[in-house]
Image (tube, helix red, strand yellow):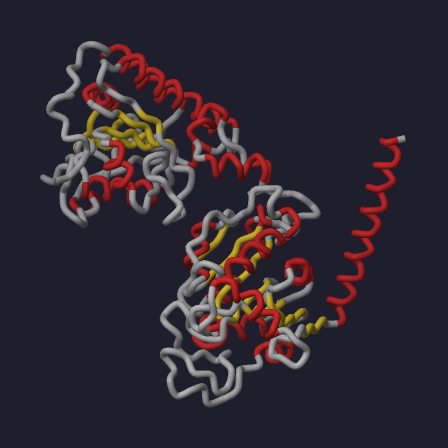
Length: 211
Length: 302
Protein backbone atom coordinates (compact mmCIF):
# COMPACT_ATOMS: atom_id res chain seq x y z
CA UNK A 1 0.00 0.00 0.00
CA UNK A 2 1.23 3.47 -0.85
CA UNK A 3 2.49 5.82 1.88
CA UNK A 4 1.25 8.79 -0.10
CA UNK A 5 -1.78 10.57 1.38
CA UNK A 6 -4.17 12.86 -0.47
CA UNK A 7 -4.27 15.84 1.88
CA UNK A 8 -5.34 19.47 1.65
CA UNK A 9 -2.68 21.55 -0.11
CA UNK A 10 -1.16 23.71 -1.24
CA UNK A 11 0.89 20.71 -2.31
CA UNK A 12 2.89 22.42 -5.01
CA UNK A 13 2.40 23.90 -8.45
CA UNK A 14 1.98 20.58 -10.22
CA UNK A 15 0.86 17.98 -7.68
CA UNK A 16 1.26 14.39 -8.85
CA UNK A 17 -1.81 12.48 -9.95
CA UNK A 18 -2.72 10.48 -6.86
CA UNK A 19 -3.04 7.34 -9.01
CA UNK A 20 0.59 7.70 -10.01
CA UNK A 21 1.49 7.71 -6.31
CA UNK A 22 -0.19 4.35 -5.78
CA UNK A 23 -3.62 5.50 -4.58
CA UNK A 24 -6.32 3.00 -5.59
CA UNK A 25 -10.00 3.50 -6.22
CA UNK A 26 -12.52 1.96 -3.82
CA UNK A 27 -14.59 -1.11 -4.64
CA UNK A 28 -18.40 -0.89 -4.63
CA UNK A 29 -19.64 -0.21 -1.11
CA UNK A 30 -16.39 1.46 -0.16
CA UNK A 31 -14.99 4.97 -0.33
CA UNK A 32 -11.58 6.47 0.20
CA UNK A 33 -10.48 9.02 2.76
CA UNK A 34 -7.14 10.73 2.10
CA UNK A 35 -6.28 7.89 -0.27
CA UNK A 36 -7.00 5.11 2.21
CA UNK A 37 -9.87 2.75 1.40
CA UNK A 38 -12.62 3.01 4.01
CA UNK A 39 -16.15 1.71 4.51
CA UNK A 40 -18.73 3.99 2.95
CA UNK A 41 -20.42 4.59 6.32
CA UNK A 42 -17.23 6.10 7.67
CA UNK A 43 -16.96 8.34 4.61
CA UNK A 44 -20.46 9.75 5.13
CA UNK A 45 -19.51 10.76 8.67
CA UNK A 46 -16.17 12.22 7.63
CA UNK A 47 -17.70 14.20 4.75
CA UNK A 48 -20.46 15.52 7.02
CA UNK A 49 -17.88 16.47 9.66
CA UNK A 50 -15.78 18.32 7.08
CA UNK A 51 -18.83 20.23 5.88
CA UNK A 52 -19.84 21.16 9.43
CA UNK A 53 -16.29 22.21 10.34
CA UNK A 54 -15.78 24.41 7.27
CA UNK A 55 -16.18 28.14 7.23
CA UNK A 56 -17.45 28.06 3.63
CA UNK A 57 -18.72 24.55 2.84
CA UNK A 58 -19.49 24.53 -0.87
CA UNK A 59 -21.13 22.22 -3.38
CA UNK A 60 -20.01 22.41 -7.00
CA UNK A 61 -22.68 20.78 -9.19
CA UNK A 62 -21.42 20.02 -12.71
CA UNK A 63 -23.15 19.72 -16.08
CA UNK A 64 -24.41 16.20 -15.42
CA UNK A 65 -26.79 17.50 -12.75
CA UNK A 66 -27.19 21.16 -13.73
CA UNK A 67 -28.70 20.24 -17.06
CA UNK A 68 -31.84 18.11 -17.09
CA UNK A 69 -30.50 15.52 -19.55
CA UNK A 70 -32.98 13.00 -18.20
CA UNK A 71 -35.23 12.30 -15.24
CA UNK A 72 -32.36 10.89 -13.18
CA UNK A 73 -30.29 14.07 -13.61
CA UNK A 74 -33.24 16.22 -12.53
CA UNK A 75 -33.76 14.06 -9.44
CA UNK A 76 -30.10 14.33 -8.55
CA UNK A 77 -30.36 18.10 -8.89
CA UNK A 78 -33.24 18.06 -6.40
CA UNK A 79 -31.12 15.97 -4.02
CA UNK A 80 -28.19 18.40 -4.39
CA UNK A 81 -30.48 21.30 -3.52
CA UNK A 82 -31.74 19.32 -0.51
CA UNK A 83 -28.17 18.74 0.67
CA UNK A 84 -27.41 22.44 0.30
CA UNK A 85 -30.56 23.41 2.23
CA UNK A 86 -29.55 20.93 4.93
CA UNK A 87 -26.13 22.55 5.19
CA UNK A 88 -27.75 25.96 5.60
CA UNK A 89 -29.97 24.56 8.37
CA UNK A 90 -27.14 22.82 10.18
CA UNK A 91 -24.27 25.30 10.18
CA UNK A 92 -23.59 27.81 12.89
CA UNK A 93 -23.53 31.61 12.58
CA UNK A 94 -20.38 32.65 10.75
CA UNK A 95 -20.39 29.65 8.45
CA UNK A 96 -21.51 30.36 4.90
CA UNK A 97 -22.54 27.40 2.73
CA UNK A 98 -22.40 28.03 -1.02
CA UNK A 99 -23.74 26.36 -4.13
CA UNK A 100 -21.65 27.31 -7.15
CA UNK A 101 -22.27 25.80 -10.60
CA UNK A 102 -19.84 24.42 -13.16
CA UNK A 103 -22.17 24.80 -16.17
CA UNK A 104 -19.64 23.68 -18.77
CA UNK A 105 -15.95 23.18 -19.31
CA UNK A 106 -15.09 25.92 -21.81
CA UNK A 107 -12.13 28.02 -20.73
CA UNK A 108 -14.43 31.04 -20.83
CA UNK A 109 -11.73 33.63 -20.44
CA UNK A 110 -12.22 36.62 -20.15
CA UNK A 111 -15.99 36.40 -19.73
CA UNK A 112 -16.09 34.14 -16.69
CA UNK A 113 -16.82 35.51 -13.25
CA UNK A 114 -15.07 33.05 -10.93
CA UNK A 115 -17.11 34.21 -7.96
CA UNK A 116 -20.36 32.94 -9.44
CA UNK A 117 -19.23 29.95 -11.48
CA UNK A 118 -16.35 27.51 -11.33
CA UNK A 119 -14.36 26.40 -14.36
CA UNK A 120 -12.17 23.30 -14.46
CA UNK A 121 -9.36 25.21 -16.13
CA UNK A 122 -8.87 27.51 -13.15
CA UNK A 123 -10.97 26.24 -10.22
CA UNK A 124 -8.51 27.76 -7.76
CA UNK A 125 -9.83 31.23 -8.68
CA UNK A 126 -13.29 30.33 -7.39
CA UNK A 127 -11.80 28.83 -4.23
CA UNK A 128 -9.68 31.92 -3.62
CA UNK A 129 -12.38 34.48 -4.42
CA UNK A 130 -14.95 32.87 -2.14
CA UNK A 131 -12.50 31.67 0.52
CA UNK A 132 -13.85 28.13 0.26
CA UNK A 133 -12.28 25.64 2.66
CA UNK A 134 -14.35 22.54 1.90
CA UNK A 135 -16.03 21.61 -1.34
CA UNK A 136 -17.84 18.73 -2.96
CA UNK A 137 -17.90 18.01 -6.69
CA UNK A 138 -20.93 16.27 -8.11
CA UNK A 139 -21.99 15.73 -11.71
CA UNK A 140 -18.65 16.65 -13.23
CA UNK A 141 -17.21 14.41 -15.95
CA UNK A 142 -14.26 12.35 -14.72
CA UNK A 143 -11.40 14.02 -16.58
CA UNK A 144 -12.56 17.55 -15.74
CA UNK A 145 -13.09 16.59 -12.09
CA UNK A 146 -9.59 15.13 -11.90
CA UNK A 147 -8.13 18.27 -13.43
CA UNK A 148 -10.02 20.52 -10.99
CA UNK A 149 -9.19 18.38 -7.97
CA UNK A 150 -5.50 18.43 -8.81
CA UNK A 151 -5.40 22.18 -9.36
CA UNK A 152 -7.23 22.78 -6.08
CA UNK A 153 -4.88 20.44 -4.23
CA UNK A 154 -1.91 22.13 -5.85
CA UNK A 155 -2.77 25.72 -5.07
CA UNK A 156 -5.19 25.90 -2.16
CA UNK A 157 -5.79 24.41 1.28
CA UNK A 158 -9.37 23.46 0.45
CA UNK A 159 -10.65 20.02 1.49
CA UNK A 160 -12.12 18.27 -1.56
CA UNK A 161 -14.89 15.68 -1.67
CA UNK A 162 -16.01 13.85 -4.82
CA UNK A 163 -19.52 12.42 -5.05
CA UNK A 164 -18.66 10.40 -8.12
CA UNK A 165 -21.20 8.52 -10.23
CA UNK A 166 -18.53 6.18 -11.55
CA UNK A 167 -15.58 4.56 -9.75
CA UNK A 168 -14.44 7.48 -7.58
CA UNK A 169 -11.59 9.99 -7.70
CA UNK A 170 -8.16 9.35 -6.28
CA UNK A 171 -7.38 13.05 -6.47
CA UNK A 172 -10.09 14.06 -3.99
CA UNK A 173 -9.39 13.94 -0.27
CA UNK A 174 -12.57 11.95 0.16
CA UNK A 175 -14.38 10.14 -2.61
CA UNK A 176 -17.64 8.26 -2.83
CA UNK A 177 -18.41 6.10 -5.83
CA UNK A 178 -21.63 5.12 -7.65
CA UNK A 179 -23.34 8.35 -6.57
CA UNK A 180 -27.11 8.20 -6.55
CA UNK A 181 -30.01 10.24 -5.23
CA UNK A 182 -30.10 7.93 -2.20
CA UNK A 183 -26.42 8.54 -1.42
CA UNK A 184 -26.77 12.30 -1.63
CA UNK A 185 -29.81 12.15 0.65
CA UNK A 186 -27.93 9.91 3.05
CA UNK A 187 -25.11 12.44 3.23
CA UNK A 188 -27.69 15.13 3.99
CA UNK A 189 -29.13 12.93 6.75
CA UNK A 190 -25.67 12.43 8.20
CA UNK A 191 -25.05 16.17 8.22
CA UNK A 192 -28.34 16.60 10.06
CA UNK A 193 -27.46 13.85 12.54
CA UNK A 194 -24.06 15.32 13.34
CA UNK A 195 -25.40 18.86 13.65
CA UNK A 196 -24.09 20.45 16.85
CA UNK A 197 -21.52 17.73 17.50
CA UNK A 198 -18.76 19.30 15.40
CA UNK A 199 -17.02 22.53 16.25
CA UNK A 200 -16.56 24.80 13.21
CA UNK A 201 -13.00 25.99 12.72
CA UNK A 202 -14.04 29.60 12.28
CA UNK A 203 -11.13 31.28 13.99
CA UNK A 204 -8.40 29.05 12.68
CA UNK A 205 -9.64 28.65 9.11
CA UNK A 206 -7.14 29.56 6.48
CA UNK A 207 -10.02 30.27 4.11
CA UNK A 208 -8.76 28.09 1.35
CA UNK A 209 -6.17 30.63 0.35
CA UNK A 210 -2.61 29.63 -0.14
CA UNK A 211 -0.01 32.04 1.04
CA UNK B 1 -27.80 16.48 -28.52
CA UNK B 2 -31.15 17.93 -29.48
CA UNK B 3 -32.63 21.21 -28.35
CA UNK B 4 -35.03 19.49 -25.98
CA UNK B 5 -32.03 18.47 -23.90
CA UNK B 6 -30.86 22.03 -23.47
CA UNK B 7 -32.85 22.49 -20.28
CA UNK B 8 -31.59 23.49 -16.86
CA UNK B 9 -32.57 21.33 -13.88
CA UNK B 10 -35.39 23.19 -12.18
CA UNK B 11 -33.93 22.91 -8.68
CA UNK B 12 -30.63 24.48 -9.71
CA UNK B 13 -31.95 27.05 -12.18
CA UNK B 14 -31.39 30.02 -9.87
CA UNK B 15 -27.66 29.42 -9.49
CA UNK B 16 -26.94 29.25 -13.21
CA UNK B 17 -25.20 32.33 -14.63
CA UNK B 18 -27.53 34.51 -16.68
CA UNK B 19 -25.83 33.72 -20.01
CA UNK B 20 -26.96 30.08 -19.70
CA UNK B 21 -30.46 31.05 -18.62
CA UNK B 22 -30.66 33.36 -21.65
CA UNK B 23 -29.44 30.61 -23.97
CA UNK B 24 -32.26 28.36 -22.82
CA UNK B 25 -34.90 31.08 -22.84
CA UNK B 26 -34.20 32.99 -26.03
CA UNK B 27 -31.52 31.40 -28.20
CA UNK B 28 -32.69 30.24 -31.61
CA UNK B 29 -31.81 26.55 -31.28
CA UNK B 30 -34.34 24.59 -33.28
CA UNK B 31 -35.82 27.62 -35.05
CA UNK B 32 -36.45 26.73 -38.67
CA UNK B 33 -35.90 30.18 -40.18
CA UNK B 34 -33.05 31.31 -37.98
CA UNK B 35 -30.79 33.89 -39.51
CA UNK B 36 -28.91 37.13 -39.01
CA UNK B 37 -32.14 39.05 -38.40
CA UNK B 38 -32.45 37.27 -35.06
CA UNK B 39 -29.45 39.24 -33.85
CA UNK B 40 -30.67 41.79 -31.34
CA UNK B 41 -33.94 40.02 -30.59
CA UNK B 42 -32.62 36.70 -29.35
CA UNK B 43 -29.67 35.37 -27.43
CA UNK B 44 -26.71 35.01 -29.77
CA UNK B 45 -24.64 31.83 -29.70
CA UNK B 46 -21.51 33.86 -29.07
CA UNK B 47 -20.71 35.56 -25.78
CA UNK B 48 -18.40 38.50 -25.33
CA UNK B 49 -15.44 37.70 -27.60
CA UNK B 50 -11.78 38.47 -27.13
CA UNK B 51 -10.91 39.77 -30.61
CA UNK B 52 -9.68 43.29 -31.31
CA UNK B 53 -12.22 46.12 -31.35
CA UNK B 54 -13.85 46.35 -34.76
CA UNK B 55 -12.42 43.06 -36.01
CA UNK B 56 -14.39 41.89 -39.07
CA UNK B 57 -13.85 38.32 -37.89
CA UNK B 58 -16.19 39.01 -34.98
CA UNK B 59 -18.88 40.13 -37.43
CA UNK B 60 -18.31 36.99 -39.44
CA UNK B 61 -18.66 34.83 -36.32
CA UNK B 62 -21.91 36.51 -35.36
CA UNK B 63 -23.45 36.11 -38.82
CA UNK B 64 -22.29 32.51 -39.20
CA UNK B 65 -23.53 31.44 -35.78
CA UNK B 66 -26.85 33.14 -36.43
CA UNK B 67 -27.17 31.37 -39.79
CA UNK B 68 -26.20 27.75 -39.07
CA UNK B 69 -29.35 25.80 -39.91
CA UNK B 70 -28.96 23.23 -37.17
CA UNK B 71 -26.75 24.61 -34.36
CA UNK B 72 -27.92 22.18 -31.69
CA UNK B 73 -26.69 19.30 -33.85
CA UNK B 74 -23.63 20.96 -35.34
CA UNK B 75 -20.02 20.44 -34.34
CA UNK B 76 -17.51 23.07 -35.40
CA UNK B 77 -13.84 22.28 -35.80
CA UNK B 78 -11.44 25.15 -35.25
CA UNK B 79 -7.73 25.55 -35.62
CA UNK B 80 -4.92 27.70 -34.28
CA UNK B 81 -5.27 31.42 -34.92
CA UNK B 82 -7.53 34.30 -33.96
CA UNK B 83 -10.58 32.03 -34.34
CA UNK B 84 -9.32 29.88 -31.50
CA UNK B 85 -9.68 32.87 -29.17
CA UNK B 86 -13.39 32.99 -29.95
CA UNK B 87 -14.43 29.35 -29.77
CA UNK B 88 -14.45 29.21 -25.96
CA UNK B 89 -17.22 31.80 -26.11
CA UNK B 90 -19.32 29.92 -28.64
CA UNK B 91 -22.40 27.94 -27.58
CA UNK B 92 -22.10 25.35 -30.34
CA UNK B 93 -20.15 22.14 -29.83
CA UNK B 94 -16.62 22.71 -31.04
CA UNK B 95 -13.25 21.03 -31.17
CA UNK B 96 -9.88 22.72 -31.32
CA UNK B 97 -7.61 20.75 -33.62
CA UNK B 98 -3.89 20.96 -34.07
CA UNK B 99 -2.65 23.65 -36.44
CA UNK B 100 -3.61 22.47 -39.91
CA UNK B 101 -5.27 19.11 -39.29
CA UNK B 102 -8.79 20.50 -38.92
CA UNK B 103 -10.14 18.81 -42.06
CA UNK B 104 -8.70 15.45 -41.01
CA UNK B 105 -10.36 15.81 -37.60
CA UNK B 106 -13.62 16.82 -39.24
CA UNK B 107 -13.50 13.79 -41.58
CA UNK B 108 -13.26 11.37 -38.68
CA UNK B 109 -15.80 13.28 -36.67
CA UNK B 110 -18.39 13.33 -39.45
CA UNK B 111 -18.01 9.61 -40.02
CA UNK B 112 -18.18 8.82 -36.31
CA UNK B 113 -21.30 10.94 -35.90
CA UNK B 114 -22.99 9.12 -38.78
CA UNK B 115 -22.29 5.79 -37.08
CA UNK B 116 -23.18 6.96 -33.58
CA UNK B 117 -26.35 8.82 -34.57
CA UNK B 118 -27.78 7.06 -37.62
CA UNK B 119 -30.88 8.76 -38.89
CA UNK B 120 -30.15 12.05 -37.18
CA UNK B 121 -28.75 15.04 -39.05
CA UNK B 122 -25.38 16.03 -37.62
CA UNK B 123 -23.53 18.83 -39.38
CA UNK B 124 -19.79 19.38 -39.18
CA UNK B 125 -18.33 22.78 -40.03
CA UNK B 126 -14.62 23.55 -40.16
CA UNK B 127 -13.71 27.14 -39.46
CA UNK B 128 -10.05 28.05 -39.72
CA UNK B 129 -7.79 30.85 -40.86
CA UNK B 130 -5.87 31.00 -44.11
CA UNK B 131 -2.66 29.76 -42.52
CA UNK B 132 -4.36 26.60 -41.26
CA UNK B 133 -6.40 26.04 -44.43
CA UNK B 134 -3.99 26.91 -47.19
CA UNK B 135 -0.46 26.67 -45.81
CA UNK B 136 0.01 24.34 -42.88
CA UNK B 137 -3.15 22.30 -43.47
CA UNK B 138 -3.38 22.27 -47.27
CA UNK B 139 -2.73 18.53 -47.43
CA UNK B 140 -5.57 17.76 -45.02
CA UNK B 141 -7.86 20.30 -46.68
CA UNK B 142 -7.39 18.83 -50.14
CA UNK B 143 -7.47 15.20 -49.07
CA UNK B 144 -10.83 15.75 -47.37
CA UNK B 145 -12.20 17.21 -50.58
CA UNK B 146 -10.75 14.41 -52.72
CA UNK B 147 -12.46 11.90 -50.43
CA UNK B 148 -15.75 13.80 -50.81
CA UNK B 149 -16.15 14.18 -47.07
CA UNK B 150 -19.55 15.64 -46.27
CA UNK B 151 -18.75 18.76 -44.33
CA UNK B 152 -18.27 22.48 -44.89
CA UNK B 153 -14.88 24.18 -44.79
CA UNK B 154 -14.88 27.89 -44.03
CA UNK B 155 -11.66 29.84 -44.40
CA UNK B 156 -11.42 33.20 -42.68
CA UNK B 157 -9.03 34.81 -45.12
CA UNK B 158 -7.19 37.77 -43.63
CA UNK B 159 -4.32 37.31 -46.05
CA UNK B 160 -1.59 36.82 -43.45
CA UNK B 161 -0.74 35.26 -40.10
CA UNK B 162 -2.39 37.96 -37.98
CA UNK B 163 -2.29 36.20 -34.65
CA UNK B 164 1.49 36.03 -34.62
CA UNK B 165 2.27 39.51 -35.89
CA UNK B 166 1.88 39.50 -39.66
CA UNK B 167 3.86 36.80 -41.43
CA UNK B 168 3.33 35.98 -45.10
CA UNK B 169 0.64 33.44 -45.93
CA UNK B 170 -0.26 31.70 -49.17
CA UNK B 171 -3.40 33.78 -49.47
CA UNK B 172 -1.52 37.09 -49.13
CA UNK B 173 -1.65 39.33 -52.23
CA UNK B 174 1.42 39.50 -54.42
CA UNK B 175 3.68 42.38 -53.42
CA UNK B 176 2.06 42.97 -50.04
CA UNK B 177 4.49 44.06 -47.33
CA UNK B 178 3.61 43.01 -43.80
CA UNK B 179 5.30 43.63 -40.46
CA UNK B 180 6.97 40.24 -40.49
CA UNK B 181 7.26 40.00 -44.29
CA UNK B 182 9.31 43.07 -45.17
CA UNK B 183 10.43 41.91 -48.62
CA UNK B 184 6.91 41.69 -49.93
CA UNK B 185 5.07 38.67 -51.25
CA UNK B 186 6.84 37.33 -54.32
CA UNK B 187 4.10 35.18 -55.82
CA UNK B 188 0.38 35.39 -56.42
CA UNK B 189 -2.38 34.74 -53.94
CA UNK B 190 -3.13 31.00 -54.01
CA UNK B 191 -6.33 30.45 -55.95
CA UNK B 192 -7.96 28.12 -53.48
CA UNK B 193 -11.55 28.61 -54.67
CA UNK B 194 -10.55 27.29 -58.10
CA UNK B 195 -8.54 24.50 -56.51
CA UNK B 196 -11.56 23.64 -54.35
CA UNK B 197 -13.76 23.36 -57.41
CA UNK B 198 -11.27 21.12 -59.19
CA UNK B 199 -10.81 19.05 -56.03
CA UNK B 200 -14.46 18.07 -55.90
CA UNK B 201 -16.20 20.71 -53.81
CA UNK B 202 -19.85 21.05 -54.80
CA UNK B 203 -20.29 24.59 -53.61
CA UNK B 204 -17.56 27.20 -53.53
CA UNK B 205 -17.95 30.86 -52.66
CA UNK B 206 -15.40 33.64 -52.43
CA UNK B 207 -16.74 36.82 -50.80
CA UNK B 208 -16.45 39.24 -47.89
CA UNK B 209 -18.64 39.36 -44.79
CA UNK B 210 -19.85 42.91 -45.36
CA UNK B 211 -23.41 41.79 -46.13
CA UNK B 212 -25.07 39.67 -43.44
CA UNK B 213 -27.84 38.44 -45.74
CA UNK B 214 -25.25 37.15 -48.19
CA UNK B 215 -23.31 35.40 -45.42
CA UNK B 216 -26.54 33.82 -44.23
CA UNK B 217 -27.37 32.56 -47.71
CA UNK B 218 -23.96 31.04 -48.43
CA UNK B 219 -23.71 29.41 -44.99
CA UNK B 220 -27.11 27.77 -45.32
CA UNK B 221 -26.38 26.62 -48.86
CA UNK B 222 -22.96 25.28 -47.92
CA UNK B 223 -24.23 23.34 -44.90
CA UNK B 224 -27.22 21.87 -46.74
CA UNK B 225 -25.15 20.82 -49.74
CA UNK B 226 -22.43 19.33 -47.53
CA UNK B 227 -25.06 17.40 -45.60
CA UNK B 228 -26.60 15.81 -48.69
CA UNK B 229 -24.01 15.79 -51.46
CA UNK B 230 -20.37 16.45 -50.61
CA UNK B 231 -17.71 18.94 -49.54
CA UNK B 232 -18.30 22.68 -49.71
CA UNK B 233 -15.88 25.58 -49.31
CA UNK B 234 -16.36 29.21 -48.34
CA UNK B 235 -13.51 31.70 -48.47
CA UNK B 236 -14.57 34.78 -46.50
CA UNK B 237 -12.49 37.93 -46.39
CA UNK B 238 -12.10 39.03 -42.78
CA UNK B 239 -9.31 41.61 -42.95
CA UNK B 240 -7.02 42.08 -40.01
CA UNK B 241 -7.38 45.80 -39.48
CA UNK B 242 -4.30 45.95 -37.27
CA UNK B 243 -2.02 44.33 -39.82
CA UNK B 244 -3.20 46.41 -42.76
CA UNK B 245 -2.99 49.66 -40.84
CA UNK B 246 -6.69 50.44 -40.49
CA UNK B 247 -8.69 51.79 -37.57
CA UNK B 248 -11.43 49.89 -35.75
CA UNK B 249 -14.24 51.48 -37.73
CA UNK B 250 -12.61 50.91 -41.12
CA UNK B 251 -12.97 47.13 -41.38
CA UNK B 252 -16.38 47.28 -43.06
CA UNK B 253 -15.20 49.78 -45.69
CA UNK B 254 -12.11 47.68 -46.35
CA UNK B 255 -14.39 44.73 -47.15
CA UNK B 256 -16.64 46.86 -49.35
CA UNK B 257 -13.63 48.14 -51.27
CA UNK B 258 -12.32 44.60 -51.75
CA UNK B 259 -15.56 43.18 -53.13
CA UNK B 260 -15.88 45.54 -56.10
CA UNK B 261 -16.18 43.71 -59.44
CA UNK B 262 -12.51 43.96 -60.37
CA UNK B 263 -11.18 43.28 -56.88
CA UNK B 264 -9.96 39.98 -55.45
CA UNK B 265 -13.05 39.41 -53.29
CA UNK B 266 -15.66 40.12 -55.95
CA UNK B 267 -18.45 37.61 -55.30
CA UNK B 268 -17.67 34.31 -57.02
CA UNK B 269 -19.77 31.23 -56.72
CA UNK B 270 -19.52 27.73 -58.12
CA UNK B 271 -22.37 25.25 -57.72
CA UNK B 272 -22.17 21.71 -59.09
CA UNK B 273 -25.13 20.27 -61.01
CA UNK B 274 -26.33 17.98 -58.21
CA UNK B 275 -26.01 20.89 -55.78
CA UNK B 276 -28.05 23.14 -58.07
CA UNK B 277 -30.78 20.54 -58.11
CA UNK B 278 -30.74 20.28 -54.33
CA UNK B 279 -30.91 24.04 -53.87
CA UNK B 280 -33.87 24.19 -56.26
CA UNK B 281 -35.66 21.47 -54.28
CA UNK B 282 -34.95 23.24 -50.99
CA UNK B 283 -36.23 26.53 -52.41
CA UNK B 284 -39.44 24.85 -53.61
CA UNK B 285 -40.00 23.23 -50.21
CA UNK B 286 -39.34 26.53 -48.48
CA UNK B 287 -41.85 28.27 -50.71
CA UNK B 288 -44.45 25.58 -50.00
CA UNK B 289 -43.86 25.82 -46.27
CA UNK B 290 -44.17 29.60 -46.27
CA UNK B 291 -47.37 29.45 -48.34
CA UNK B 292 -48.84 26.91 -45.92
CA UNK B 293 -47.89 29.07 -42.95
CA UNK B 294 -49.45 32.10 -44.60
CA UNK B 295 -52.63 30.17 -45.29
CA UNK B 296 -52.76 28.96 -41.70
CA UNK B 297 -52.23 32.48 -40.39
CA UNK B 298 -55.09 33.64 -42.64
CA UNK B 299 -57.40 30.92 -41.28
CA UNK B 300 -56.54 31.80 -37.67
CA UNK B 301 -57.18 35.52 -38.17
CA UNK B 302 -60.46 34.77 -39.96
